[in-house]
Image 1 (cartoon, helix red, strand yellow):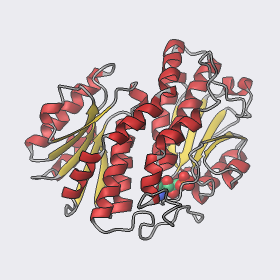
Image 2 (spheres, protein in one colour; image 1 turned 180 degrees about the vertical axis):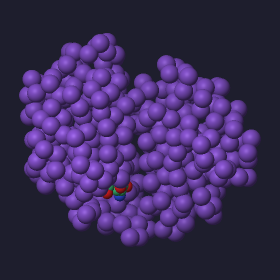
Image 3 (cartoon, protein in one colour; image 1 turned 45 degrees about the horizontal axis):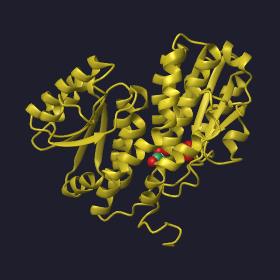
Image 4 (spheres, protein in one colour; image 1 turned 120 degrees about the vertical axis):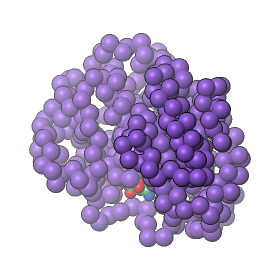
Amino acid sequence: SAAEKGGYDYFMLKEIAEQPKAVADTLLGRIDVAGNLTLDEVRIPASVLREVDKVVIVACGTAYHAGMIAKYAIEHWTRIPCETELASEFRYRDPILDPRTLVIAISQSGETMDTLMALRHAREQGAKVLAICNTNGSTIPRESDAVLYTHAGPEVAVASTKAFLTQLVACYLVALYLGQVRGTKWGDEIQSVIRELSEIGTQVEQVLETMEPVRELARTLANKNTVLFLGRHVGFPVALEGALKLKELAYMHAEGFAAGELKHGPIALIEEDLPVVVVVPSPRGRSVLHDKIVSNIQEIRARGARTIVIAERGDETVAPYADHLIEIPATPTLLQPLVATVPLQVFACELATARGNEVDQPRNLAKSVTVE
Ligand code: AGP
């Protein structure tokens, strides 16, 4: 009913708007006044976490994209090797697991069969499993050694939005916590990222307030056949997520690429007026990556692409190459997906509406996939 949708036309719009609160709720009570993480609820003793020598993340769809981003954070802050794998592929390749492996299973519903089978396989091999889940008491957390709940609240729309942002927050918390208990050399950075993370809800709010041009742009693209998405580093999984949202909602051909792969094939797809969304890393910090992506944008634009650029506010080097510029607030590099994903959700939702599609219940899809 309209009341359940809180005055919005679709649950998806309501859930996109709820993201600042979902993010804040997921952080609540997990950072103490001194700026340290308190994840006592994660019932894996610090002594066990100190011995972990490998992290393996398993998930599907949007949750898998959160897991891809988590890999960058975990390896950078903890120096523990981490791999992220599609849950549906995991057990069939006979993965190497032992009691020093920490497996993280990410799932909004907690009922996804592929993810459940992956975690069962991991536990049979003696690995410890930590679930990141949005649904209290669901099967995946029940069968795991420990759980860190995301506090997105119920997500009704089939296309995941607020659950994704809270999965990212939970992944950052786990990565930072592992760094904290293991005392890595990134101690200072960890402290400052924890501070920035605790303010991130405000930045997500700022993004939501500036989405009208994104909606206008989406409406002008309603009769396109293809949209491509490019990113590097954590912007690559963001590109994949932008493409997945567009497939699910707008039923359009959409593909995400790592921008560095362009020259290895995908650049052949570029033609006159093809919309290409590019997620640009911050010009501060990892500026090598920034320069490389700016040259990628120049390359595709020279071949006629219509560039839709998501970049940090005040990034002057990229602006001249953007046919459409979508500005997002400055964040630490690893946290950028929390703000960069939001315009892509709005973009896909508006394109779906413009194409007359059912936003909350896309064809052929179910909210939770309980078959393998
Ligand atoms: C996201 O928009 C999807 N509908 C889908 O990819 C989803 O993320 C995936 O099926 C995993 O679901 P889960 O988080 O409930 O395990």
